[in-house]
Image 1: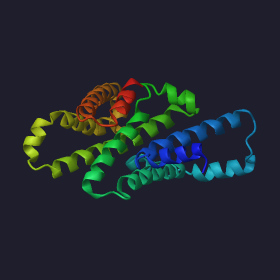
Image 2: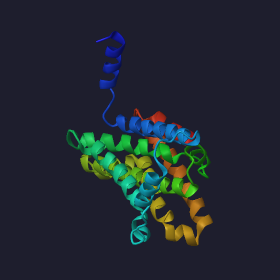
Image 3: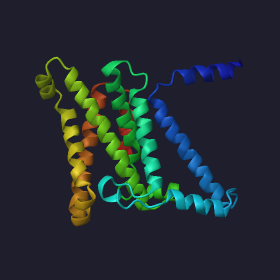
Image 4: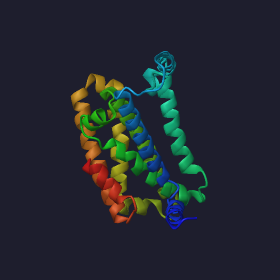
Amino acid sequence: MFPILSDLYKQTTQIQYVDSYGIWIAILLGVWLIARLAHRLGRWTVQRPIAVSLGWRIGYELPWLAPTIDISTAFEVILVGVLLGANIVLLLVSAHGWADVQQRAAKLAVLNLLPLGTGLTFGLPVHLLGISRSAVAWWHRWFGRVMAAHSLLHGAIAIARADNPIPSMRHDWVPLLAAAAILMMVPVTLHVVVRRHCQVAMRIHYLLAVTAMVALAYHSWDRGSDSRWQVVGAGAL
């Protein structure tokens, strides 16, 4: 094997299992941008009848699902399935005990946090990806739900594995503050609440998001986590 390829292989094997999630997201983002550029240049190879037929199939509306789980089309079912499946596989496959699951949940929570830090009005992803604000908001909600699930799982395992849970929770009040802020964001961002009290709900959401970000940044920095710079980067976005 060539020296360059040998070094590249060694670096690849040293990549942690969970970190591959972020790498695949970056690869898919790059593929999307290339495909969008090719479409704009008029070099799209898919025939229009086939594209229309495929778009009709994956865009088939599922109105009976929309009010309950925020999924309204067959395409959204596929996207949510891929998102949840990838997170479940990276969380559980080849995990060595609950301690490993706890660490993976923390890293996956941070990785799912990065797409959430894209501005107050989603201007950056809308301009970059060429999709509507409603689509970006939909992705924002689902990444937020996955991030919240990983964060709460990480905290629950930490409490369950502690020798003295009550004194431990009193001492580590910062992660509890982050967990409380994340939990409170769930009812505030429900479609029914946002529709009736949009301005109030969004202001509370921003306040809770800032609280959770500051608490998570302090917690990750205090523990010397490898993900602390990713949390800072998400806050900077």
